[in-house]
Length: 255
Length: 255
Image (cartoon, rainbow over all chains, first blue to last red; front, side):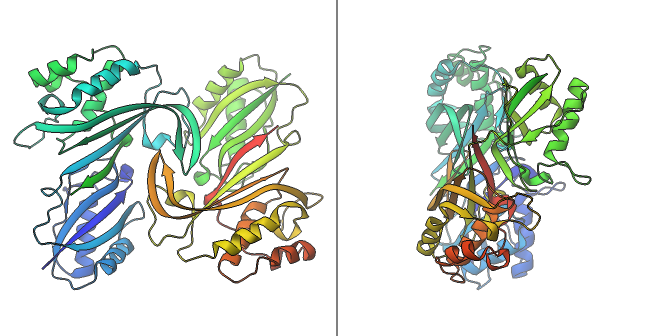
């Protein structure tokens, strides 16, 4: 058996997330169906993490074991021939048998985009959260700083999250205010907020719950110092709402 | 009567172009329907030019005369409330009665994007022409240089084009080879070509026919010097095919 590692991009808009489930079209399901057709094998495809419905991926990583002797590039092209155009395998390579897309990951990064403009460019709208009001970016930045480090993120995990511990380390939590976004290398004006998170691992909905909470700080409904209280209390009901999926991009996995 | 000038963005994918026609959803038609609802008037909305089906606009400009006393910002918001989200009025202002979106235009610019990568990012695919082969960019650049200046563009006009003269002046015709494109301010790798054209006015299909011809040069099927012959012959059948609409962006109109 060979272990194949894939780098995958997808526009999450049309899918019920990564993980196979009885109803709804999932990215994992489409990969496993395509591999069944290509190799004749029942293959379990493991991703670095299960992105939710609507979440986008620029550098998702997945791996699977196969008895197929097809070269990685041939597997990549065969997968792309079977997958819809909004899911693409950017590269495929054979890796050591002990490589695991999830457990071998050292670091993950996510980008989250918000527009606070009154009017939003049609090109940008599908990829951001629209909050047409002024937010207190200084308070938000102060709150973002408190997210950095090793903490118990229980207050930011989804109710269905199955992880044994909620302790995670966030190495980067940055927030940039932008008056332009680049789209197809064309500059589009507006009022944008760009979040970037990097860490060893993330709980279910953790990035979206952190963004939703930071936005509450931006609206003045919570104070930056409340982040510290949330770590201590560990109560999901005290944090902000879950930010919409469409503004979230899984950027990169480091192994 | 007041003269209102609009700056408009649209994703052309879902429309049969700007100009109203008996069948198909057009952007002009949607504006005129919305203005009928808002003002009760039958209003003729004039754009700087009629973009074809599938062509995108970042800075389309349009104007219309109205007896309505609504403030421009109110008209803008009312239009946006009636228009689909892939068409947006970015700004509205009252202008002098003699302003005409088409005849007052001094300069227009267009961007055209091509990917020559084998695999294309799902995020970029809807906004470029896919040519998965190596193109001779040096020859293409040489040919682009010959397009600059004042010429008879008969060989590059669509058969149905109604302009009286085919003489136009192109002030910029540039081609850049890029190994990254920026999407939502995220860098996506690949092999891209970015065309930019600026000129006083353009004939129907002129940009797409120029791009289609330059690609023929890139494939070695035509020589850069053939551009000069095309100007002399003025025969549309001797130029290259019309490049697909989805890679074309109307960038900006200067008045």
